[in-house]
Image (cartoon, rainbow, N blue to C red; front, side, top):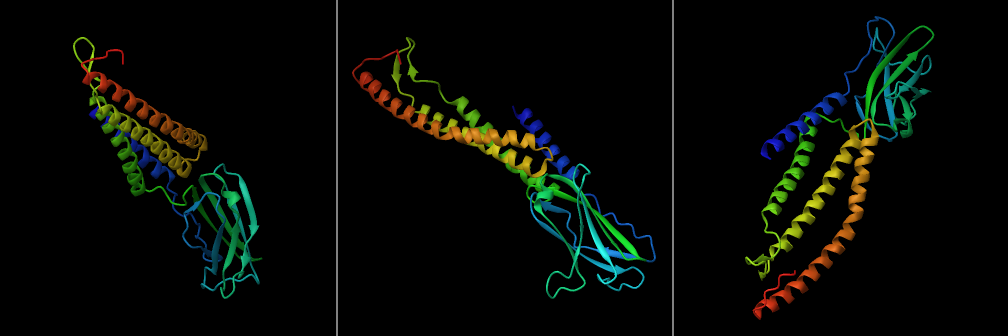
Length: 279
């Protein structure tokens, strides 16, 4: 059991770290080998939240002297490509749209263009009749808006393995509890085993841990996996488990009251020297 748990732990850690390295956005790619033309600068933003509206702000300068470029001579265009390589946005950037903000261009992109988790790319192209320049950069879309770094992978791994650890410990504790009532060699009940109620409590805790594992797994899958089918399966299992919890609680309490009544009856028989064997 210990070896299996260790192997499972190492496998989950390697998997999460692999996902974090795969999902990390590659570095900025911008060609600037020209001595004349435009250089485009934008605030560093490598990860955004799925389905969220986002505005890209940019400043354009002349490469040769650093002078800001305005819309009097130049137009800037924004192009967005989704994780499948489709060209989904092509628009002209606005200039000085915000009050008291000067020499700034912006491109407002609606959240519907970021409907899927994955790696996107965008290109900003600015040009006049004689000069031009462009900027390209990858953009990662996740369910949380946060990059799955190695540090976050370790935290998620810790939570996940803590749930599994408690599940295994409680499962082992359940296996150590006695089965049924205490009986003599003839199979007659000689005392009531009250630990069966503790066993039912442990089983219910196990059920809650299963729900928690489904919930955590589905959220991680929605946040960082490009393929949503697996995440949806996990979330459906979570919903089904959660929906069954109330009926389970009702059945559990009915079972407790029935057993309390039955135990009281058996204790009464034992106190009169009668040892039943049909329960």
